[in-house]
Image (cartoon, rainbow, N blue to C red; front, side, top):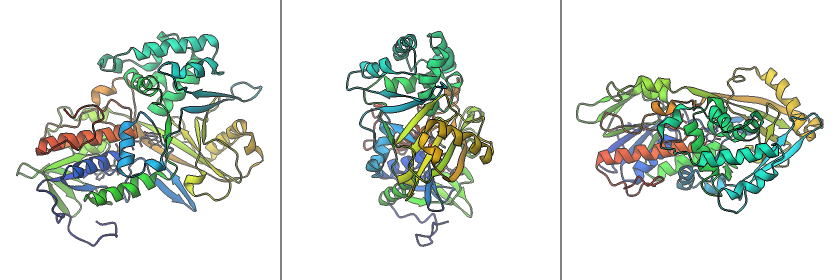
Length: 475
Ligand SMILES: Cc1cc2nc3c(=O)[nH]c(=O)nc-3n(C[C@H](O)[C@H](O)[C@H](O)COP(=O)(O)OP(=O)(O)OC[C@H]3O[C@@H](n4cnc5c(N)ncnc54)[C@H](O)[C@@H]3O)c2cc1C
């Protein structure tokens, strides 16, 4: 029941902190956030995580001398909640944001060779901050660039609170707004596939509009990209655990909750192998399918809707070369199956050569492809994109597959995503898949965790003053 760093003691024997006890089930980013927020508000908290580590879908593991992330993760400057989380766990300096949006886009569509373009921003007000970069973007014709500008302005005018947006697909909207197949490939999908984990035709217009409006059309710096310069586990496991410990949260890893039921005294009983925990409030911060299985009868009007929230895969291809083959921290590609490529050398602890991670989103077609086939496909692609790989030796090649990386942001998904409150008093939901308005991201996970803590504190009659307020909900 313990991770070996603490003396054995029964779970029920939690050090007294306040009269009210909350159990958070699930130690992903949403659960860690909820636990921290509740503890910060003075509630006694127990956090249960089934796996041997915290961090959920954003974690690291060892492979020989390398520390490998299960998948490259990035966030944007506009991710105020995740940035709060990084601050709260003392991790901001380890996952800095670039000074100014700058995305190298390498096009190998044409047989005559590679062409580099940049998506950059200037220090000008929105939407002029992108104007110069778009005007000079070599991967689109002049006519396409003008039409992209018009579509961006139309997107800016969409009302994100209109539920009808979620029923339409983004691809049809782009086509109706004059976007060519090339503009979709070279711009909209370039950003959209990585942030939504779906191509435009499979994505809800509501979610796509939210991403593009918030990221590209709200504040000039909103889309500046941040990413961890250390393994994800350093942030979401080690530093998160440290913050939880200092906040007085009792964290139990390798501890799966098997049921949640009423304890007959107006509270809840959470069953873990061998014993149960009594709680005044329970936050279920587990994936939607597990939440469906743990929710007691009557907690949601239509619990089967949770099962309608489908998932989408992300594949990461990892290649270690014997020498430096890429001189930028990352780039993205056009005209190649390669999507985004990140240099993970330093973060992984590699001492010689270079380690690249290829992040392949919306990977339905490749998620079950054997490693040998992926190797045959991706190494020649890297040779087309990065000439220096041609003489380099491949020291290691492996893949990580996350079949349920995100919820599928399909049209209509918004109706299925529940809020933090259930019909059962004292029982709350968190997770990137809940109704945060965001696609399945670390930002959504943190927002959901704070939202669940806010609802739980209200139910416990405790002050919510200390909670971060990302959306002005505090009132
Ligand atoms: C490869 C990949 C790349 C990604 N890239 C990005 C990116 O670039 N940017 C970004 O913002 N997001 C990205 N994401 C998405 C992001 O990782 C997730 O949205 C976020 O981590 C979800 O957090 P969560 O806490 O909601 O859920 P989860 O991480 O799923 O956490 C749920 C936790 O609950 C635990 N659990 C389940 N059942 C039980 C039980 N019965 N008892 C106890 N514990 C239980 C699980 O073990 C898990 O730890 C990516 C995801 C993947 C997989």
